[in-house]
Image 1 (cartoon, one colour):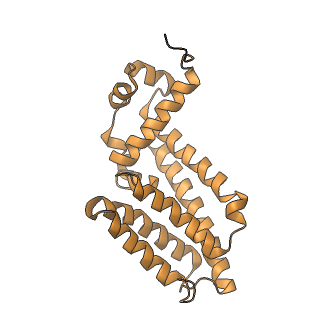
Image 2 (tube, helix red, strand yellow; image 1 turned 120 degrees about the horizontal axis):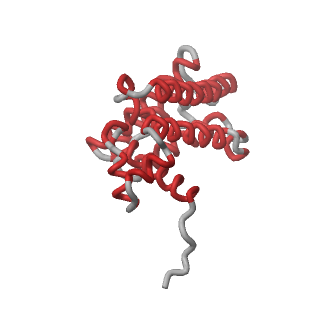
Image 3 (cartoon, rainbow, N blue to C red; image 1 turned 90 degrees about the vertical axis):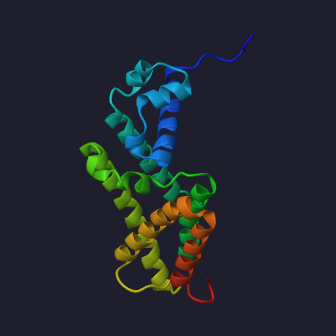
Length: 199
């Protein structure tokens, strides 16, 4: 006889969100349905609709959760107290972790391909998420160039956008050519951004 406590509504809602995020990052938003989630969780589709009445609401909840994670991560003392090159490497580690764990890509990469078909609320949430990440990285790059620990030409915000686009693309490349190609791209990024003594 099982002694496990019955799943609460909160547990079910969280499990739905976890699985939906995994499916989104692995397949894209338009390539999974509530039926996929229900089958995996062993519940009826109506149970999914109870917690998330529309897929639009579920998609927005996924992006909002990623946004909360970003804000929590960037404000952690173990991140804020790092030097600019170390902060850059901390960001690269997030992408390294993603590349090492199967076919998933980053949130931006997963949703950008479907962007024109996404509900307006999801489009806006993605713009907000991407904008905040770009703004944070631009600050890191600017601080690094000011103290001589990072090098690049042009405006920090433009460089941050380029770096993040490259990282998103590197995960797509890894799907096709394997993780080794991903690491080639990361090494090139570090070579370009770090002075020779740091790279």
